Image 1 (cartoon, rainbow, N blue to C red):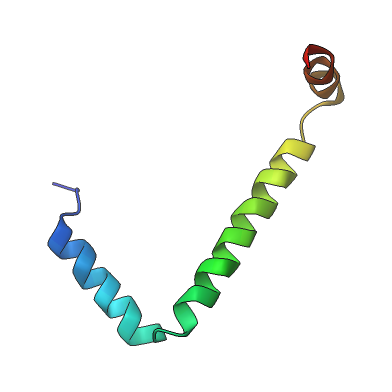
Image 2: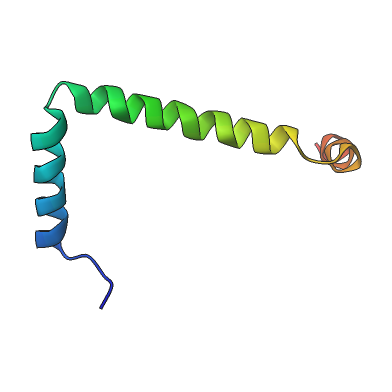
Length: 59
């Protein structure tokens, strides 16, 4: 229990298409992708200074 099968995934995708329409979905995915990219960049920038220095020395 707790795993999504192919049928459940198709139903969810169908509902999303009905709610947002085919033209809006690429815009939503683009926004999601850029948000994830910004989050990863911010997480990299928040590393302590000594850790960054060690990484640069190893390269």
